[in-house]
Length: 435
Image (cartoon, rainbow, N blue to C red; front, side, top):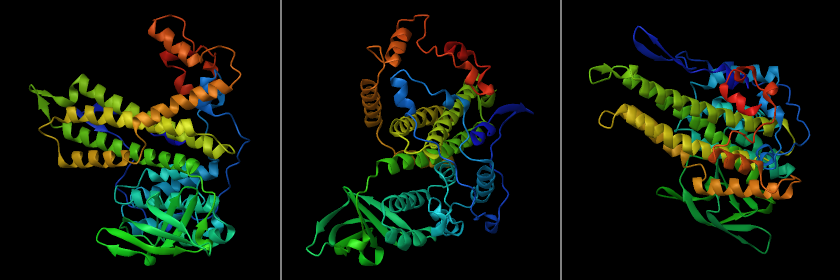
């Protein structure tokens, strides 16, 4: 993808200083420059086999190796223009509302921006800890109403939400009781927030509640026998696919936060010395920084490869991809923060660095746990393998792992697809394993 390939972070020695080059600039951008006119929709292709599940069954989609671009040229230019507007203006809710970002995924007829998953993930790169949670919840609420709401519910609520009437999402936090008149009574409490609507999901139903119907009690909002009429009840709600996409948005924001931690580390080590030597010239330090950036950009590539699947194909199955992105994100956070804290030194860590680390750790809390993710990935892959027509008795991934452990010289990943790789990957020595 252009956005991933074109963005480079690299180091060089210039007048004995270590400099990091990043995509941010100090220029401010006017809010009136944001484009709101419709752009051509992405042409979706028929359903395809799930990518990661197919690998378990010995099948590999060579189309993925070409680093496909989801957006057509006009949407790509529109996204780059929009990113220029939002990258310095997403620290306050009011500004997010002015930019129309509460309607990112809402359709044009509902005053939304109608952005694709790829575009929404790109925009999420620029939300900080002050705005991320509100916009994240709100975007999922828009998707729930857009996907499962009735025509009347869509026409009533989507324009309101797209205009910036903030809606928070609450899953299995209150109790719902069916009344004789087909209305529902909700009872419970949730954390206080600056919203206009609340959307409660209980099992396969969702309930839209105006905040005015709740009672503030300190830091909580209490629902005391709140009545929800059938017009505000959404039936047959399945959060699975919506949450999969939501986790990608969270990982997108997480990747940018990790870049800020790396940047802060570089700024901290430039003036430091150890044993009368400049810390920035230590090979071990440069290796840690390079490894951290490689992991971050690998995470970013995984995110946008997955959004290519959700945007480019009908009814995509990305359960395994979403789980893999989350698991790798957790591993990347653990490794990067541990290494960078060591480089900074335990007794000389700056407050800014610690604040950025805390922001990263807070974002990680929105992901599933590592053990749960690992179990899901293995069980889903094996289940798909058992249902496939693969002739061998074991998955080729299992065979490849055994060969690796036994140090055999015959890798099991010989698919002969070197010719399909992006030109930038042709020079890698590891490609010899893929011939």
